[in-house]
Length: 346
Image (tube, rainbow, N blue to C red):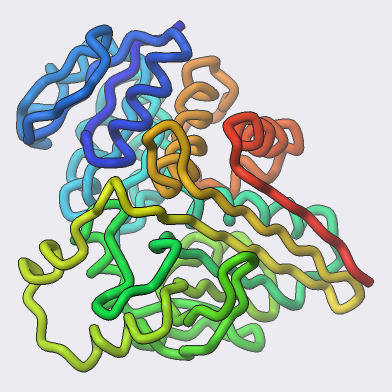
């Protein structure tokens, strides 16, 4: 068993820490806020994570899990990778590309695997798996969203992770590929209706989710859409809401039923391959905490076991290059009650 330090005790960070503790690891959880209902076996430090002070906070830990909001998540990467032999399972949703630190990590015999959630994360691994198994990819599309099970007359939404990161999704220009050309469009473009299994019609729109996939997946078309209940994004576009307003309006209600859905669709022009991943929460944990955190946890355990032999910075696609690693993630998710279906049509 390993000594693992989790940075960030939000909805996902708490799930990651508790899951790793249940698997027998020694856990330290650090967050600037007072955390409640944390198992007594987990060491909790109430402290704001400052990049200049990171080394003593993680001293003695073989693996660090970065669950910090994107705005500060990137700032801790270089100090972590400066620690000789450090391994990082990184979930921070940042505008910066962690691969810029690849040579730095290698010079310190360190590793960082990033975007280790559901999307980006599992979606990346599935696309890489498709690319290796199919002929030349023509289509690679992702739809993903965490939402209440029923819409309401207001936002029909509550943020299952850092609200500031949700706002980043809505404002950061979306990079994608169309007809072999990499392009950038404003987020929220290409709005369309999509049928979600068990929930009916919802609305999808462009967000900046493909990121590293633009360099690793050689598909003619490559795009990710975020999914919300109809009316949600129009309300956002029409309004003039401050970040403070949105954080309050989107506050997560643990008593409200919710679900997370991911669809990954690939085609080589002959065969269409599709995965649907859906979860509705379990054991007091939200579906987004589970579907995101289970991937993060599995990568943290892989790092603790020395599964990743290479040093440097690696995107989540790395998992999809090895059938056994991808199958390990999928099976652990299924064992935890996440529904994953796969279909092929020719």
